[in-house]
Amino acid sequence: MSSPRTTRRSFVAAVGVATLWGLSACGGGDAAGSETAEGGGSGAVTVGFSQLGAESGWRTANTESVKAALTSANGFDLKFVDAQQKQENQIKALRDFVAQDVDVIAFSPVIETGWDEVLQEIKDSGIPVVLVDRTVDTSVKDPYATWIGADFEQEGKTAGEWVAQNAPDAKVFELQGTLGSGAQVDREKGFDGVVGKQVVGKASGNFTRAEGKTAVEAALQTYPETNLIFTHNDDMGLGAVEAIEAAGKVPGKDVKIVSVDGVRDGLQALVDGKFNYVVECNPVFGDQLATLVKDVAAGKDVPKETIVQDKAFDQSTTQADVDARKY
Ligand code: AHR
Image 1 (tube, rainbow, N blue to C red):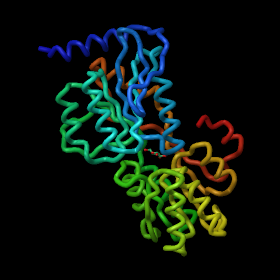
Image 2 (image 1 turned 180 degrees about the horizontal axis):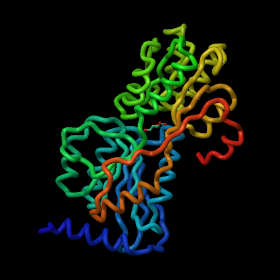
Image 3 (image 1 turned 120 degrees about the vertical axis):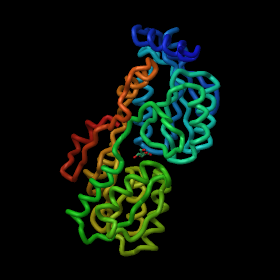
């Protein structure tokens, strides 16, 4: 027999799937970094979404895509909270979502570990979880219904293969993303698995331009032989460009840059000759997420994982490609 919670969720979901909503979203705020699109209609699926931050162009594009898809017009009542890259903020947001008894909790975990307690609490509440972008490493059994994101390990591998083919003698400095995040751990694994022997040093730039610049300033002192940087995202790569130029060197020539993401600024750096190769990580999957959230709320079977498709860009990329880029 269904518990009252299950019955209510199934009802909300069934109505949600069958109904077209026409209510407009109205922004609101109930705490620092949180926004609520009130309304959504009586059959709306209430989604608590904990975004990990706004650290990069990729993240901004991802947030825009999620907000554009999880609208009241599409049948959602979205409660969006920005964690400002702090795990404690995410854990608080997740607990708030449980207290608010949302229909589905979605979140992009800033790092992989440290979620056991809160994931168990969510599981005990019966609210299904949709993992977005990054992954978790937890002892909780069946902690989420589904995950949607990119194959980070493949991204690192693709970057490594370019280096193996085009710069097999390069001395590589690896500019890591947020330490312990799925994107850092897996990109490093993929890259190092191909050309780890060429890596002379590593440091984190926390996925931000400013910290990327600082890390590369230090690296150019500590590892002066560096002539190629593999950066785990474009923002840090753009910070690296600044550091390389400040050191009197030419990015893209004296120090090559291989990056991940493919945001417009990253592709512009490629066209300008400052980046040498960019592996895409596509942030625009809000529509796919919306479908998954509705299916999960409706109790339908969903795939355990959905891999967002990526491509790669070399220096044949044109200004027209950059201008056509949506993010
Ligand atoms: O998790 C995806 C990564 O997070 C993106 O590559 C990076 O730009 C973002 O901060």
